[in-house]
Length: 57
Image (cartoon, rainbow, N blue to C red; front, side):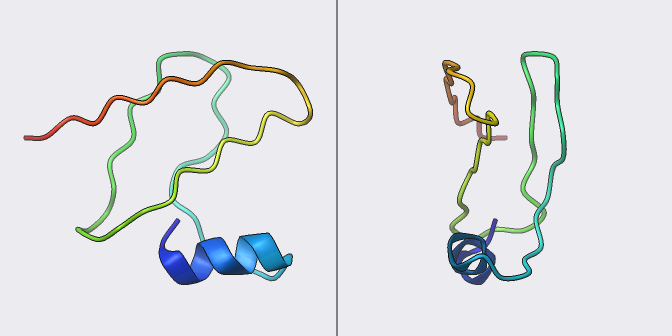
């Protein structure tokens, strides 16, 4: 999520995001444009482990 959308997410307002629902791992995500991004992982109250690796082209 971009900055404004992340704040809207925290506030419970409408927001836009890139990505979707994934039930397999690993997941590879590409950001649509250069900027600072927030990665939100919602596990629906389940305990999960998340590892993030940043790759550059």
